[in-house]
Length: 450
Image (cartoon, rainbow, N blue to C red; front, side, top):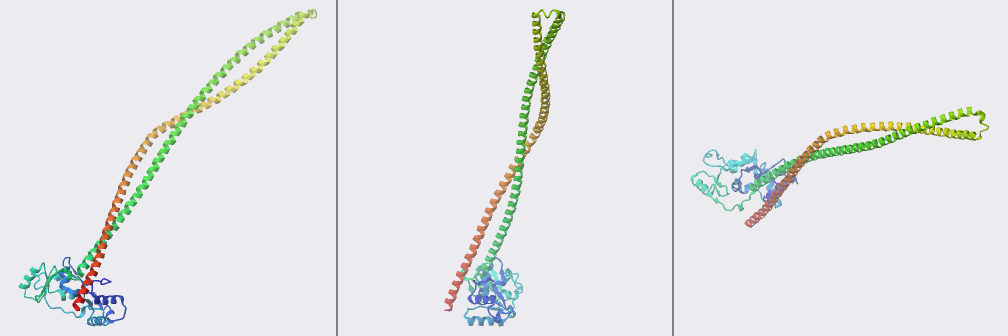
């Protein structure tokens, strides 16, 4: 039951609202005395709403009550409050017409067969509709009325009626209340809204799954980028080490050349020193020989020394020359000693340079081995980097595909939301139309009563 009851007469609205609000303790409000509305216990099949509304007429708005006392109390309430009129159906005392539905069931199409009745209220529906036949049009209804001796009401799917007394009622559908049609339309709209909401929910879940997949791919993409950067960094480090090894090799070669030149220079100086020492030895031998000859002569002529001044002078000169030679020999020995020390220092430095050269050679060999290893590793690194770039391109393609899918889902969601908004707008228009029809019906009722 609708809470506002805008499709119903004032009396129906007054009773139902009071019952729902439980404003006072009247007997017709107690112990579930009001059971609902006639329109709430029946549900016609699609396309039969107009026929059922025409057959039931105003009784669609009747209120189902527990018993006659409840109906009487409700009528007294409406009268005392000038709240309008309403029909009441006492469920406990309703009577059937006694018409047997199965007698002509094989030849006639009964309207009751096209109606779903709320459990427990079958007797009520039968009492109103058990003798109502439904036809396609008014011509078929007239034919059935002429050939049928039973007192039956015939209604068309468009709402035209031939009563059991033969009275014909028809015309435009606008004069019908349209309660069942609107209830059916609202039910369909609610189903459509529910379907749209489910579709929205499903689309939202798909979107969340796609977003989760995008985040996972972005994470994998980030890892691939990091691996690529690490490979590039390893490649750069290898190139730096290779360059440093080349520079060390060049420095070692240059140092080796300098050391070789120094070694050649020292060897040349050593030869010069040996030649000079040999020359000094020869001069020393000559001087020694002359001194010995002089001493021999001095010994032979020792008796005549006192008389021979010029000979003494010669001896003095020889002694001076011998002293000079001795001083020269001493200087040569010192020079020789200094040259030998310089030679030893040169040999020591040469050995150190040789060891350093050997180390450089070893380092150069190690550098070449590392270069060979890097040259073997670099193709693998280049291949890995190529694979990473290909994987990166595939992931980027997947990312763009998922992004396009997300955009497409957003468009679908937008369309569904627009469709939902249009459906809600249609519901609002139906409610406005319902209010307008109610006002029109009230105006007609007031005009007829006046």
